[in-house]
Image (tube, rainbow, N blue to C red; front, side, top):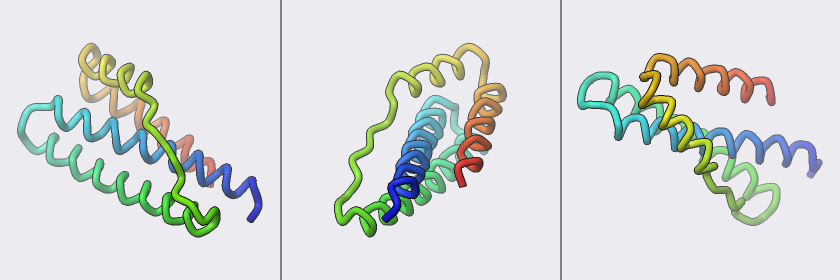
Length: 104
């Protein structure tokens, strides 16, 4: 298997794991209501995407990839959420998603 494909898959997995983590964290911090439900749904979607990349890498490498969430980045987004609010934080996340799509 080409290492460049595996490298791209690892980057995509790292991005999906981070997205899952931040959307889950924002849902925890946000008050009960429709936005919280949407954040939870998005987190579940990101979790499914991460599982796709885990399976992809398991099939190619014959081992489960070891990935951890970037806790510093998660903390920075959490602080951004608390200072700037959900609107700007979600816009920042959207920009990150566009970068991820560029990987493909």
